[in-house]
Picture 1 (cartoon, rainbow, N blue to C red):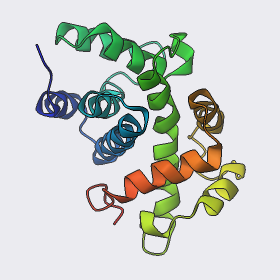
Picture 2: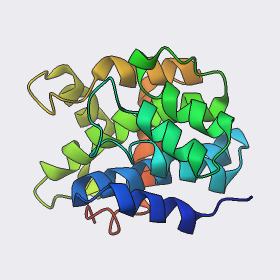
Picture 3: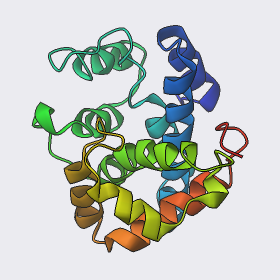
Length: 186
């Protein structure tokens, strides 16, 4: 059975009630769609992977549960193993290797999307258009800023994709800017 964005949104909205986590899912969806174009992947599939990577987090937030419970839910709903493994691999602590470009892209985009959102929210207009790569790099060094974002994952993610960090930040930032209004950061 072929899955659609409607299927993915249904699952996301069933398990995720907070607006901020839903917007994070939409941001990672957008970044993954851009990565699929860049790396010649299936745009809809990669985007849905981004959309669903944290769908279980609100209901199952512990490291013992997330994303393991979500993977079981996805399996029961008919999502394939490669898709589920990419989602499992976005969390370092699962020990699931990122052995596809889609999995590497998800890891590389997840924390960065959260960080870019935080960078936008401290701008005067709370807009992604105001965010510059140089200021993102500066804020990455400030451990007090967006302290829940794992900086090592951001750096490691770009490295796993084989791209320079500044170039990856700029690429994801540009992708998010295309959907800034939908993300509440326009």
